[in-house]
View 1 (cartoon, one colour):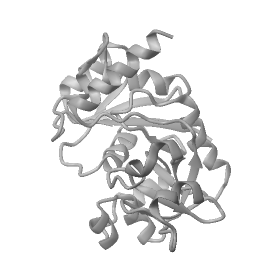
View 2 (view 1 turned 180 degrees about the vertical axis):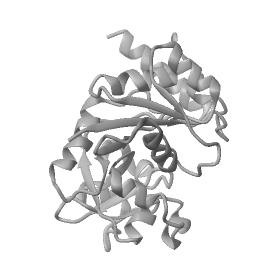
View 3 (view 1 turned 135 degrees about the vertical axis):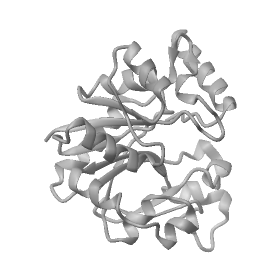
View 4 (view 1 turned 30 degrees about the vertical axis):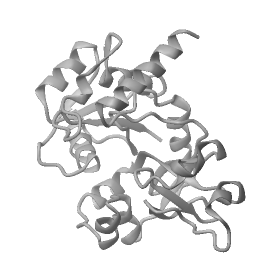
Length: 252
């Protein structure tokens, strides 16, 4: 089975314009993401709508493809990029362009989901730790996932799911394993083509979670489990935290 990783990268981020090109101790954010992914996959491309990002990728020796400015999601951008590149791979992995510390083992975990022939779409989750506390569990910006016994997603929500009845919330993390969604996806090529043509669904609109469109339309999402944390960068404050983490790595 042939895999390709595509990293959607926009310049015009609402909360952090120019984010892919910010300097992270001598390398741009997009370069750090690209290098992490390239350590375990040979077919890696950045999909962008901005010539500055495209040029920056070419400057460090990476591969990039220009895509439309009108895409509403990274999923749509991945499909256009896949078509422009040639579309010869079986599975497309959508890598977040703002997670410079993504680990090869996480990518390998999502690839392993396709060892099951029936897998249509795959994603990753990480168990919430007791040490993270209630604040992390109840954070609506950290979507939760419940799984069936086949390791497929039943539902994603910004609310805490499941609700533990007759149990104080302070004990929830010690009584049940809750899963945090890690926003990496992989799709079989034919499925990616299909889901980019679906209209928004009522559940997607309610929770503002794109993956609910796929579940509501009957697609199955296989889930890989990772124990490794990711560090997404959405704001300048997130960048400062990421730089401190990067500095800590260099001191080890």
